[in-house]
Length: 218
Image (tube, rainbow, N blue to C red; front, side):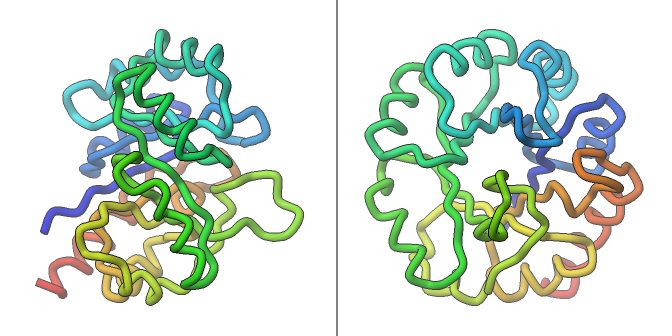
């Protein structure tokens, strides 16, 4: 089974090149002012052009209105939109219809019962992203560097397409892949030297760890 790998929260050509050289299938750009990984649509457009033909570009937003989404889509021309807020199934469907782009809907997970939240989105969202619930007091819906119990994902219908996120690092990715066997993984804070600062060596180490884990499982 192929494994999609998304490096999220990219802001510089150097970090993007490290992700692409490592073999990322997806590269993510975050449009959320409270995030240390926030990027302007025009800057993301430049990086997206650099990634064209090598990886799918994902625009990550949090409860964005149409005006902001219009600006992002016009400046960046993403391959996919990721909704990481409290968007409803109706809002998700409206965004898909407005832009004609696939949508990945993110959910905060801490226990098995949280997975029930995806049910109204089945057939609406094209893919799901399962992230750990933010620590108390955090203003960020993702990128907090915390994990959740990956074993609860074993109960999911195998036909559900998703990416596993939340606290992934080179040190724990082997366990994550073994316990959840996800179709895709998403890493952000786990390849940073400081919040919002991607580290090329950490990105390379992460890909090396993924390859090693998959070689053992093969």
